[in-house]
Length: 351
Ligand SMILES: Nc1ncnc2c1ncn2[C@@H]1O[C@H](COP(=O)(O)OP(=O)(O)OP(=O)(O)O)[C@@H](O)[C@H]1O
Image (cartoon, rainbow, N blue to C red; front, top):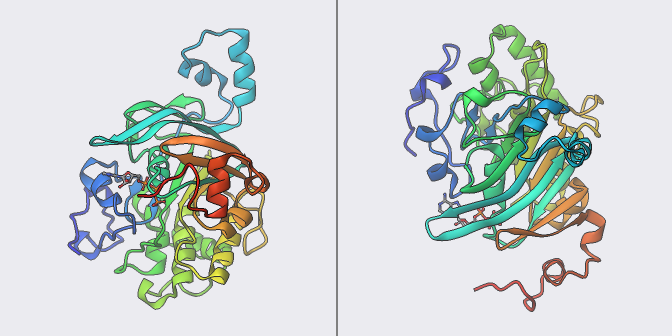
């Protein structure tokens, strides 16, 4: 694969210059066209790497900003809505997205709250990956709003509007830089964007690898890792952060089919790993996880059962059902019933 030139913002004296880096396909057929380096704020976003660190906003609970972003007046109703929505980190409100004449998202609305573990499921081609990219700020909605911690995001994520919330997108394939060591892969954003000394970044890399159950692999190349280890390294890369900052923003992780193509046992390992780095879990070192909330797009029943608490069912570009995971198999919604049973008969038609 040809190696595109690396934007200046992505170059770092401690990492090999542009020629040393190879951008990989993320395994997502759309990512290379929609997420091309030319129209991306690459200082924060790594496309095809399996990682995006993107949007920030003024932080949870900043009521002034919630007021500011609302089209409603400062009425009692609004105040009560704000109280209810104080813990909402990401909201998609009536989001529409088309590619040419293909209307993929047709009015998607939902909220992701602090502490949640949410799954997005639904038939193939119904827009699940697209809504993840919209949430991450890699695709702009044609219509509708993405609201990050109460503040409307305008267009794509950009350096100007980055503050308050970190959003990481973990693509299906680990998509590591083949020509960089594990240490350089995991520490990539810190080498690029922080003023931390090299030895401190190295220490953080070692600690973060340990948190996902990996030890002594810092100097290995990705080709020397198994598939499962690569996924762990990719996860470590998405959860590492500069711990010297005064304000550590909450982080939401978006996983696109993290267990696709894995055998059942390897899937269980990844599902448990996803749980372990969440704030309700314990990482491999026994420390509480640091991820505030996460969203998983998946087709796997095991991942639905094991890794998420609440489900959004997307069909023909809309959320047609939402409920707790345990309600999924008992739902009487005909679309959900057909999907859960895998029946060919029902409202979901494959052509
Ligand atoms: N950049 C793009 N350009 C053109 N079409 C696109 C682009 N991105 C997505 N699409 C189309 O939008 C539709 C929805 O794609 P998306 O990947 O979001 O579906 P999905 O629900 O994640 O599917 P799957 O479960 O099969 O992964 C597909 O028909 C896809 O081909």
